[in-house]
Amino acid sequence: MLDILVIAPHPDDAELGMGGAIVKFKSEGLRVGVLDLTDGEPTPHGSPEIRAVETAAATEILGLDWRDNLGLPNRSLEPTLDARSQLAGVIRQQRPRWLFAPYWEDAHPDHLAATQLVDAARFWAKLSKTDMPGEPFHPERIYNYYCVHLKLAPQPAFVLDISSQWSQKLASIKCYESQFITGRPTEPRSFLDNLHHEAAYWGKTIGVQYGEPFTCREPLGLTSMMGLV
Image (cartoon, rainbow, N blue to C red; front, side, top):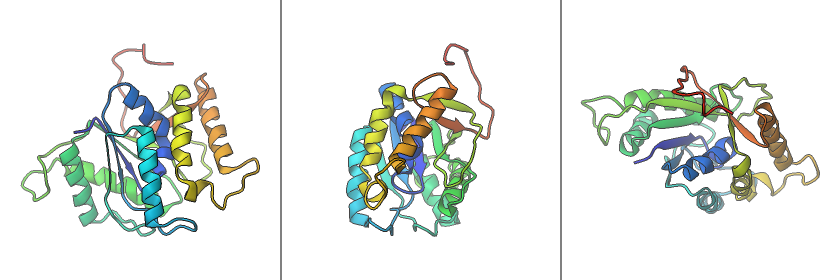
């Protein structure tokens, strides 16, 4: 069973949106898993076999406790009743305290569908008198990470300091060579350069070197101010 389950529309979205947070959570003794909803293919330089190898390499770098793929269709992901049931079944079996899902505003239809699917599956996971596997379970909260295809200026609920985890996050992203290195410009500013600038920007907003932004539809509660940067 997991403390945290990250739901990603495609392999690499979890690494891009919150790879640093995953490494930090692991260093704090939490059990973290990632569920990729699709295999992310087709892409210009990838294949299902290539993506599987890349995902395995990134998984090892992040030190994940569990990772799986729901096998839903890439490019046509929809929050159908069947997909909702499949995801709710995973939630019931893994029983994570917290879910992490993509931000709900995006240009990529798969990302939008993934967020809707997570919201619905969280509710369904607590239902009784159902043929879904596992026992009824309701994760405490859904947090949303940013891995968007829009030029947004988000106002996150909080920014997590990932200064010590940045190098591992970057290494996990570089595992996806078919997506972020092959066929992409290498001159500044490259895709990886932009990732660095974004992480540095969010770090600057909280007075550290690197950061990752997150938000939540529900209010966040504190038991102490001591955890604030």
